[in-house]
Length: 157
Image (cartoon, rainbow, N blue to C red; front, side, top):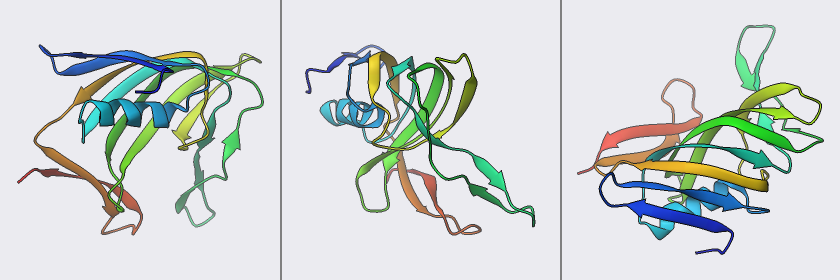
């Protein structure tokens, strides 16, 4: 496992707890932890600091339809006050994360949203806990109504 990750599997509760160290991306770190312990589906929570956050937020069009904003990248480091996500498989069969969080920046502005993979590097540390689920298949597929890829939750066969 990457030396920027510290993680321990608790055999009694089947949870993984640990921290991500400076400069590793939040999503890539959580995915690496899950690969290390053979986790294919999970919920996780975390808090800590990021060198910057990259998010999108909901935007309502004039016709009241909903879409995401363009990517927003903070111009200061942020303290991730609370974050929660799900880990499952992408439509292409790779481990993927859906994550939302709330943070405060160096100007003391609170903000949050849907975080984007690959552009949320740890500033100091991010502490996390992963709650694996074992009999569930989570995979992104196009939603029947919206056509956008969302996690679908199915019982493993």
